[in-house]
Structures are given as structure tokens and as C-alpha cells.
Amino acid sequence: MPRAPKHSALEFFPPRITYKSLRDASKVCEGCELYKLATQTVFGEGPRDARILMIGEQPGNEEDLRGHPFVGPAGRLLDRALVEAGIDRETVYMTNAVKHFKWKPAGKRRLHQKPAASEIAACKPWLEAEIQVVHPEIIVCLGATAAQALMGPSFRVTKSRGGWFDYNGGRLTATIHPSAVLRAPDEDREEEYRHFVSDLAIVARAAA
Ligand code: SF4
Image (cartoon, rainbow, N blue to C red; front, side):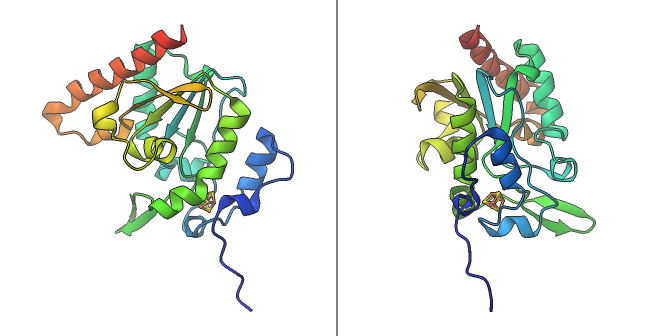
């Protein structure tokens, strides 16, 4: 008999919420269809008492293979930008709105696919639980997927980047995802990168 479809990560939650129990439970999550294509769940990582929590969209090709968030090209650009902004990555908890890599084949490559609203919603319990466990003072949404996952579908990063919003007793800000800098046309890339660093510098000042 076919198994009943699962509709949310909540069905895979551990009885007791700790970082370790969440991370372990997420490894077998089938809350949406994305686990079928991906190599592994990529859960958030960083200090449990981090004051800053950063959220991207989903793991990319390298993250999927290595099992860690922000270790691919976008992660390396983020690392460089964090250094320039004066934020020590080791002090930041890094995660994604969606914990499995969504992709489609393109020859030998695996091409990133934007997660659907239903997949973001199915995965949101993991993100909310991470925020509950880490309880950061500052949440930084990197890109529209992360920002809309927490602030709703009408949130526009282009309009609100660099601004501050209340979230769960802390403060939330949003900027672009570092992959948007990588995708920018050659002539605009440096300017996009500088703007990204200046958004992160606002975070650094707020956390000082
Ligand atoms: S993307 Fe999230 S909800 Fe979907 S299977 Fe993976 S961990 Fe579960």
C-alpha cells in the first residue's frame, strides 16, 4: 500500500527540541518532495548562542554534496563580504529556508531551481525551530526566499533591504543573496558587491 503523503517537516519533529535532536531528525525528513533529488539534508550550523542568524534560500550543488551551508561559490563570496563588513563568520549561525537542494539536470550539471511556496512552507518548521533554539538578537535574510518565508509573500527585498523589522522579540533585516552578486552582469558586479557589503556593515554596527 502506498504511504500517505507528508505535508510538513513537523511530522518528523523530535519529541524534545534541541539543536542536536532537530539536526538528527531533519536527516530523515520527507516533509516535501525535495529529499528525493538531493544527496542529504543540509541543516544550519554555528554557535548555539549566536547573536546573528543568517538565512539563505537553499543548499546549492556544493552544499548538497558536502552537507554544510554556504560552502559553495556564494558562500565564499559571503565569507569575503563578512570579513569586509567586520563580521566574524564563526560567530554567526548560518542556515537556509529550505534544507534540501532543488535542481534539474542540464547535461552533466545540476541547475538550481527556486523552491515552490509549498516547499518553503513545508520546511519552515525547521527554520522556526532553529530560531527558537538559537534565539538570535539579529536575523539577516539573504534574498527574497528567506525574507518572504519569515515576513510573508508581500515582503520586497528591493524595497526594504537595509531596514529593520521586529521578529520574534529580535530584529530582522534583509539584503540580497550572495548568488545575486555572482549573477550580476560584469559591469555591475563590483557595485552590487559593495552594496551587499554595506548592508552587512549595517548588521555589524547593530551587533557591536
Ligand atoms: S526540503 Fe525541508 S520539508 Fe522538504 S524534505 Fe527537505 S527538510 Fe523536509
